Image (cartoon, rainbow, N blue to C red; front, side):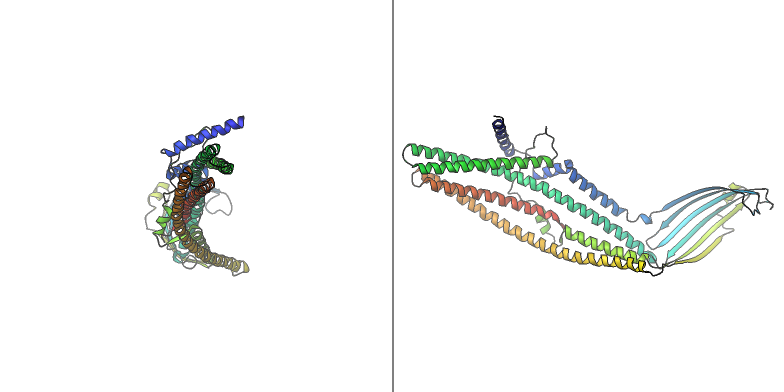
Length: 472
């Protein structure tokens, strides 16, 4: 009894759903927008995409100005001690440094110090203060040759961020495809339910009409059994349609993250309406599968890593020069005020050189990076070729399926007209029930085939989400 009440309740729900879906409801775009706002997986992928974009903006972090500040307090009683038995000092420093894409490093730093020497043996050295402002310029000449390594690193960070961004984009589009496909499946299940309901009602009319003819002695019992078999078949089809509709409704609710208390929203679906993705892409001459583009980006990253590794193993040769002002006074305030005077400048120029000896470790590191780059490049070429083939195949399938829909639409129309004609002939006693049943069955099958093909066409349009237009 309880199961019967549940079945009745679901049928009442279907009646309400039919009325609701015939009125204005959520369009597919409105549904997708709600899913993006409520579905945690889609929101997570969106956050990953935003994070990757921010990483691309951080690629020049090494070129950002750097502020330095320091303070040192010391007390020294070690021997030998010419300045005094105990030497106290307080040192202050403040500077700013900046590296440029040319491999040039610039640093400006100011330093001051206060010194107190107890029992100093040298007159005038018991207390004094110093100050200095120094400008240092350094230029790379071999490793990071005039900023070549710096630019490689910046490019590598940007490419890696792009790789991460499009990887998240692919995952997001895969999830979005499933969400949109569910909307299409729900719309198909609803249309299929309406069709199966109408088919059952027509079969019941044939059964009723045939029963009357048998009772009146006009038709034989074989015709009646044939009509009732059709009703039974249509009832089974109706039950399957109800089950499929309920299953797709549950998926729809899950995509929108609806609670048990929330009602399933009404939807407004049109399987005849094209989705815009494919036609937009067909207007471009540079379309690539996201998976292929990811392989291309990975090859770029590996190539830049190899170049960066090779640069890091080069000898480090840099030229530097410093110009500094100096001040000296017994009073700290006077030493600070004279800090920029160039009466007693200090100049220096020099060269630094370092080199890692060639060993198996060094050559292995370099060769490994190069082989990784070559492997990624070969994979990228294969992926790009496969992606181009997939794009051509998608367009071909779309054109074929579009023609199939037009053909199946005509077939369904002809079958509907044939079924109506057979019913009319049966009412006039000019045909047998078997012919009507056959016509009804084939008309129903043609309608279902048409609906499924339309849904496949819309899904094929949606699958073009996995392709993008390449701007560069």
